[in-house]
Image (tube, rainbow, N blue to C red; front, side, top):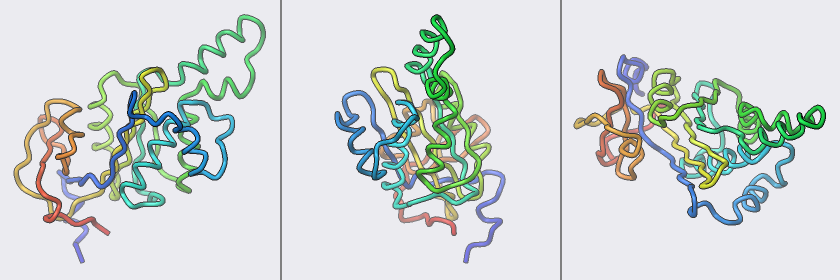
Length: 216
């Protein structure tokens, strides 16, 4: 059994256990049908942004071999433009009368969080961040991560649509050979397996997975 202090030191290390990188033409043309099949019904009243988040998050969880998250996992979602389509609809309705209630709710990006929590049958620390730099979300989440790691997503509903997700679990036996990551693209490369926070920001290591085990 691994001692708790091994994974709760000042510089915890996380291992990438699941990925889902859907963007632009890589997003299946029938992604909404696939999501409805996965959920057993079509999502109602949640908007495109939340549907995209659900599609990517559930795909990432499948990749990680998990059905749900523990309560001490941090869930963070980043979006530059948020629910732009719903916001446009609400602004159009305001010119005529009061906006429709569900259109107004769909214009609030935070509404995707209850949808994710319900789909994952999960309660915990969740938040949505509006940021231009996707690396900022990774660093923020790493600073706030709980003992069971993170589920991180980057979602955009405007073309080219985006739903990119990473699941990170705590690593009890971290490898050597970490190097500073100069960009977001570096930290999500297929060959990158480990993250940790260093003095200069995010550090990564592309070491084979055999040296690390998931903490329990």
